[in-house]
Every structure is written in structure tokens, then in C-alpha cells.
Image (cartoon, rainbow, N blue to C red; front, side, top):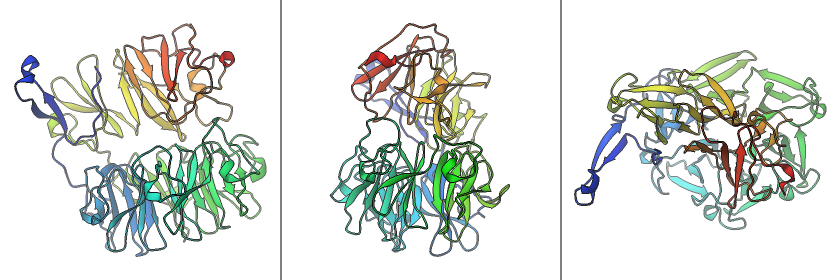
Length: 531
């Protein structure tokens, strides 16, 4: 049985008495989750709790501001070194414009930037918002809808999926969108336009040497304005930049070149995030935190950060911060091998394990599923919690995840991130983990729709899959906003040894709005000759 997926704290159970439910009122009881709690405001920064922090920026007042995404807050470290909340609380909810940020609720704030006007800008799902110097909350771009729309009109009426943001030399806001595969810009009059990217017709980057507005982006993962004034865009495959004449080029390739080269034009480098300290374009990559010197030679600044738990934030003065989202900590990069903790006590918030579920703290429960033994599993969301039939709670999976499902044998199928790529893993009851679907950042890996028959699931790039389910033994994984590239459906018989604990012989993936792809466990995709 699959439960509706509702973000509730605490988790409530609606109980109705069978047939009499139509004449008698239902009863609501707390199933899991206790009262809200203090996350450490007023404590020294190293003692306070942070849950899934996603960004950190130094404000014009010299203080550090932190997007505490899991706790739906923006917080800062004051001059005394104590943590205080600037906006939001434990409740994730949208607050209309005009409210004072100190009293407002926020919905998973991310991607902080201070604008030229001194306002603190951040993203909130399908919107870019700001806290003005007088503390008022305002929307800058986005109408709350995620379908692309609005170019040439007011930014607040546009449909967008807001990723990292930046400001150009004229103070205009740049918005990267991984899902919409574009970079958009909001000018001084509040009008939005696209400066790079088009509606995709394939999965890769294209258009080098032509106008950026006609180029295809393999997902705009990050955006920054470099010290040369050019706009740099990290895509799923490459780091690209828009030249002064509006044309686009690949700055460094993640698909071709030598793995052991240190020269920009000759090397292959998988770039994840991109920032600037005013002198260099600084990147997290499969070789660590890096930049290129004046001779276009690679300089390694920091250790391996290829685990997507780390996020990068760089200040104009040269400060480099790394955020460990899983542990809720912010670090300063001191040297190639040294990280100095700034915030967070490194505690994973699993309060209540081993006791009654109603006494436990749940950060932000979003997904539910039922196991074969009647246990209820809750995504919380950097862990999976299990409530046994006797109502005791425990943590059974500790890692950031997008979605999960439980099969008939009690295995978890979980969407997680590895090397900035989403993959689906199977976790057995004894804790062993196997990658089922999704490739690590290997340029040789193919993408769904382009792989030959027989390609194993762990050699296929699945890009932006956000959800899955197991129903009657089949695994369903919808791909968002990807147009069909082959015929509407196909299937092929094959030995059923691909998905292990899942009984059904086929894996189904919704491919765009009109197509359903049926994938055997060994062969993975439809044959390339199918149309």
C-alpha cells in the first residue's frame, strides 16, 4: 500500500471507522513527530544545529548568512558568534509579499546572494525573492509555476524553476535553471528574458560559436559572472561561457580531452559548481576545488569534493566556504587538505530513535511507504525513518535523498546523488547497497534514449529523476520535461536479473507527456532502431 506524500510536521493519521465513516467524524491522531524544538538560536555557531544548509554568504554588515534549507530558515552568525534566525521557522510554507521576514515562513530557501541594493536574494522553489534592507519580503521573479513562460514580460509573472543566482556588472539578476536548461536575466525594469538556452531537442550541449540564445544547454547547473565580466555556466557536461558578442563557447570540457592534462584546452574536467573571487573562476570538480592560472594551467585549491554533499560558496575577498549538507556544517577552506568548521555541531538530527514515534522529532517528512511487515517508512528528508508496528521509531538510512520506495522483500529503492548525478540504489535490510540505475560522471556513459540494447542500468545517465514508486512489483521512474525521442512505447523480453528484489519483469519510465518506456531488467532501454 502506498500512502499519499504530504509534508507534515508532526505526521498525522486520519482514522475512520469503516462504513460508519460516512456518518461519523474521522479522528485525527499524531502518528509520528513531537513538538517543534529549538535549533540552536542563541548558541555559539559550532554548537547550533543546521539541517541541510545549502549556501553561505557574507553580508554587507560583515556577518555570515546561511540558507538553512532543511529547517526552512535563513540564519546568520552575529558579531558575538551566536546564531540567530533572520527569516523563517521550522514550518515550510510560502509567505506573501509585504510581510516582515522576521515573522515569515519560508519554503526551503536556497541560493543566497546579496544584491547591489543591499537586499538579501534567495530562491524559494519556483521564485526568486529578496529581503530588503528594512526587512520586507518581496518576490523578484517567478509566479510559483514551474512551466517555462514569461520572457519579455514582468519577471514576477514568469514560470521558472529557480536555481543558483548571480548579478552581472549592471546589477541584473541571472537565474540558472537545471530543469529548464536555460539561464534567464531580470533587468532593472523587472523584465525577464533568456540569455542562454532553448527548448531542448536532445540531451547534450550544442551551439558553440553561435548565439547563446540559440544554443542548447545540458542543464544550467550553476552560473557566475567571472572577473572578465563574462557569464560562465556549468552544465551537466561542460563549463561554458557567453562572450561579449553574445556567442557561446565551451570553456572547459567534461566530455573530451586527457584526464591527466593540466592545460585547460587539452584536459577533461567535470565541473559541478562555479563561483568567482574577483580574480579567478573557482570550480568544484572531479579534481577538487580548482581554478586556472594566467597560463590556463589547473591549480588545485582543495581536497576531493566530488561527493554532492558539499556545496561551494566564494566571497569577493577570496574566502572559500564548503557546505556539508549531510552533516549540516559549514567549513572554511584553509589549505588543500584542511577544512576549518565554522558552523554546525555535525549531529545528524535523529532525535527520538529507539523510543515512541510520537516523541521523535521529524525535520520535514515528505514521503511515506509501507513495508511487508506493516512498518511505516518516512522520508525525513536526509534519512529514512522506520516506525514499527509497536510505534517505536528508528533511522534505517542516513543520506540525502529525493524519493524512495519499499519493495515486497523490504528493500529500499532510493534516489540519491553521486558525483552530482542522480542514481537509484537498492538498500537491503542488512544495509548493503547496490546501484541499479544511473551512471557516475563518465563521459562514455550514454543517456536514456541513446543507449544500445544490453546497456546495464548503472551505465545509463538518468539526469533529473525526482521520484519513483514500486507498485505490483514494477519500478516507475518519471523523467521530467524530456521530449520523446523514439516511438511511443516498446518492450523486449530478457532474463529478469537486473532489479533483484523487484518481482516484475519490466521497469517503466514516463518519457515526456506522451510516451511510456518499458525497460527489461537486463536491457534497460528500447532498441535504437525503434524509430
